[in-house]
Length: 633
Ligand code: ADP
Ligand code: MG
Ligand code: ZN
Image 1 (tube, helix red, strand yellow):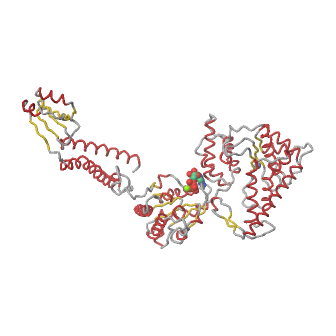
Image 2 (cartoon, rainbow, N blue to C red; image 1 turned 120 degrees about the horizontal axis):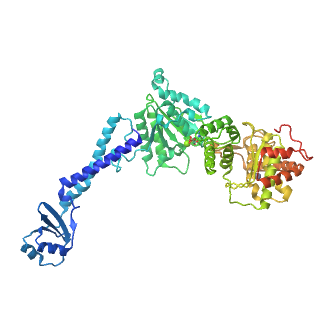
Image 3 (cartoon, rainbow, N blue to C red; image 1 turned 90 degrees about the vertical axis):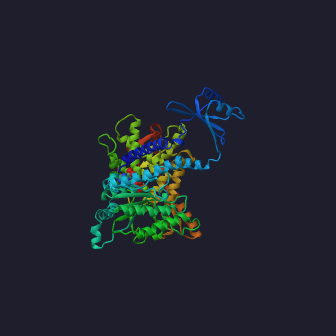
């Protein structure tokens, strides 16, 4: 049953319950109705008595109030007023006018109890009882096709077993509408999942042979690469229900709730098997238990429950547990042993073809001008995840709207790459002319050093438009094709390119600015990785001096060497960076005239394309450098 229907019948139910309650309270229990009692002054009461309108008077000595009834033929009206203190005449007056009068005993507990029961207990009973009945009825009618949670009995309170239920979102596989077609560029991952899909579609075929299908598979990879998307696609392909819960949802305030949720999750799943249980961000619960000082009882209990459920369920029915994480190394070993998450499916950052395919999928959802070249965008976004690429398309669409167009054009896309990678153009930062000049020389420095070296990717764009990320400008280099290996030469060239900005400042202004801090950081990072991870230094050779942490989250390396060695590493790193710095200075000195020319051009134009840059650099005016043979263009 879909959501809308559910909501509608719930509304109907509330209305009916209210109507029934009102009817009962008005007709069956008139003594407890009090809506029709009118409060009046004492003087009105006296005058009514004198006028002979009052038939009955009842004095409540507990609350010092008087209720009196006036009858007018069939009509009967009840009034209430407060007793006037020390009115000794009242009894005489009442007797004179032949009014029935009485006083009740202040202790009303018996009646009060009945009153409370009727006015509060009854509606609750109607509510929950009715809800329960309705729930039963609906369930029967639908042929038990929805989980019984959060409806009827659970509605209006936590009454009937609402507490402790996990908020597992069940989405029927087909309804998510996600299939493998919606996931681009993850062919290896898809291949590994095909078997699971086939098992879910046809569990009997497997069990007939005696094959045991994997109970669980762990999707590991950097954030935004489509792990969640893949899990949903598996459910969609197999057409089975999909139960999703996030690891962090397990870890709640009350001890024991997490374990209860796990139990409930698997109970629901086994009712609906074959199905998929997806635990997103499993590292939130599945962290190694011996992690040391900060042990978390709740998390451990939850994890233990998860482990025992995974052992316990009978896999003939076809429950597959998928989980996603970007920190596989932090997971408890017990989770990874056979019979649990024994399969590990890497979901890596997309390569060039993958990026183009992902862009295409998302581009299909927005209106584009004809002749858009997504290949260019894919080439300029190495290292971008699927989520980044989806974001680029969306930014482009937003930009098109902002500029009052109804189709996205190539420029929107190019600009949104900059936005996603470098941050939005910052309009409010106004650089002084002198600062602009410095930034121009700095960026041109990077570009010329890059152009003059064999191992550097060609320049596609230089800009000195400030970005919200804090960058005052940037030089973009894009490889013609995808690179998987970096040679030592290329790594050294990269360091030199990064030093090019500062080198230009020193050479032209004989001064240094803070603008190079990011360059310095990156250059140092590369040099350090060369020494400690890639065995590229003469001094240490092929010895691993560090160990990578959090591979998928881009964590750096942790040194695994003695303190003395660490000092030598620092010296070696320094030497490598300095070497790059000297190379950059040398190149820029040799091309001083071109540096001036291009920097001034950039200062005027603010953004220069790779083509314009190369045209000026190679224009034969007597200063053109002899470009390395491998340099394209
Ligand atoms: P993860 O769970 O790995 O962090 P998600 O699956 O949540 O990443 O991906 C976030 C979004 O990025 C998806 O909703 C989708 O729009 C987009 N995306 C990521 N990877 C892909 C892909 N391979 N193909 C198509 N879209 C993708
Ligand atoms: Mg996710
Ligand atoms: Zn720089």
